Image 1 (tube, rainbow, N blue to C red):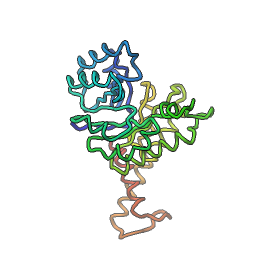
Image 2 (image 1 turned 120 degrees about the vertical axis):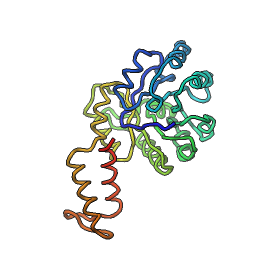
Image 3 (image 1 turned 135 degrees about the horizontal axis):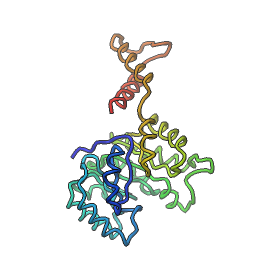
Image 4 (image 1 turned 90 degrees about the vertical axis):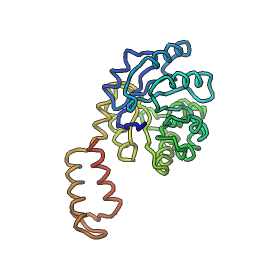
Length: 268
């Protein structure tokens, strides 16, 4: 099963099946959440709703409960009754947890100190298709109380974790997904964070509300002038050998790869 990674991945509580289709329509992929979005007493019903659903498997991710919980086995039993084969495994702390999910593509959600430090090994697991990081659970695992300063900037430990997961994914040739932005009403700050994500190399950003989807898509979509510049630069490179100058700037291999990345994003 090939999973279609798009820039905006929208979480949807698994105990709200009436929202499944709407979430799938609005986002590039929907994350049906059996973990944090569902209270423990409601999880049996949520699993039943998941089994009864009929979404596009290529655009559906199911977040199960952590591997060391009683709910994990029940989640997998339900998942095996569906056609969904992309799993988000929260609080992952080792490659063996991903490898145990044979037959599934795994998005490893690194959201503890152990998970972030193990990110390179997790990313290298053959069935891991992407890594994501989680700010709030990470800080909670350290005994902290907030991942951000009052002005909204991430604290250094969160920035370090974000970069570590991105680098681990990139080194393994896997996609990296940026964490959710909790302040639903602050679209400007979300846009700034998403713009930084795509410029840094993230393949997607997860979100918690439908209103965030358009903001994220706009951030990942290159502007017309960026596309025109990338096309012109690559056209010029076709007539050059090695390093050359274009519009007053030196152009070498990395600059050309940046241009190619712009065109790939424009084509999505």
